[in-house]
Length: 128
Ligand code: SF4
Ligand code: SF4
Image 1 (cartoon, rainbow, N blue to C red):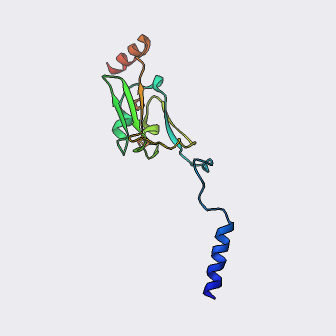
Image 2 (spheres, protein in one colour; image 1 turned 135 degrees about the vertical axis):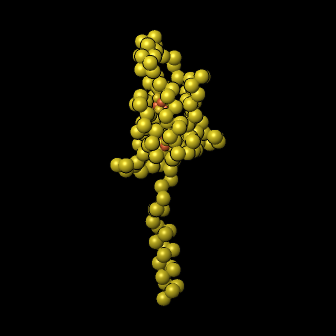
Image 3 (tube, protein in one colour; image 1 turned 90 degrees about the vertical axis):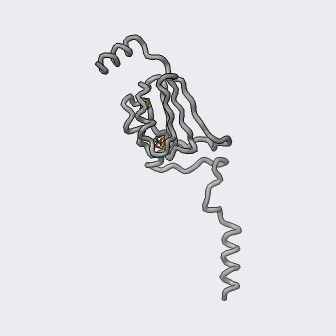
């Protein structure tokens, strides 16, 4: 009985598809709540550092002096905290997965454009 059972399992496994997908050779499945990956729009960023201070994995580093924003994608767990808290709406989650990274750390780096004189005046007013 045991031998037949094992033979049945072996035969079924030989002729059935594996339960896992062959990502990235095949596209990954996406569901309604799939978070995918973090996307940053540097031109909207106010360099406030809220995303950096509230990221639970310290994936983001924002330098106010140098006006740079970087994210280590090996650290990011796509929790969405920074997306919810960003006051400038410059972060969002794209449901597509990123391509697999081959180098560590997997850092995305952006220089944030200097504010226009109008934006500058607005932020000075807000700070006053
Ligand atoms: S999505 Fe979460 S883990 Fe990823 S950078 Fe934002 S706060 Fe950090
Ligand atoms: S929270 Fe938004 S506006 Fe502030 S530094 Fe991060 S990305 Fe830029």
